[in-house]
Length: 145
Image (cartoon, rainbow, N blue to C red; front, side, top):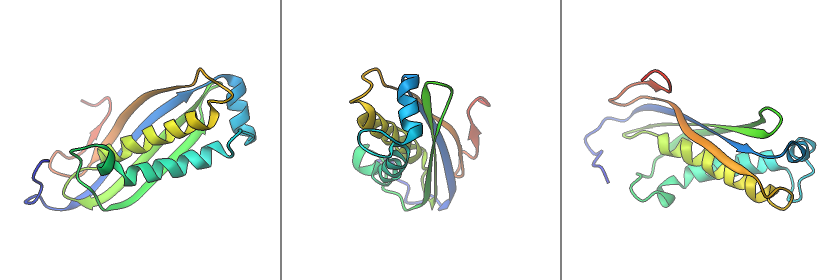
């Protein structure tokens, strides 16, 4: 692990996103709330939050962080997918990028688990960091270098 003992605690925010692609018929099931395992979006949202809280248990060299908040938003995108956006916040010595990315990944995996019985072609795709702020390296936003 990287030694962060001498670093000052600063406010840090990271936003990540991803998408689960599915058939239009499966997306209709999600919208209707009639999935075989229950309410897909709310269950995946809670799973994403839980995933962010467990990032250090999943990724070997991540520091355990005191998270101030984790927000996970999941909404239909187009005719064949759900978009996942996670925002993680902390005031600490290291960033929360991995927590935001993990929240997206776990939410996406949960969506697949909840829908795999009705759609075998589900794809979790385009998981990526969108922005981060705080710390020595400052602010970064995708597309700005």
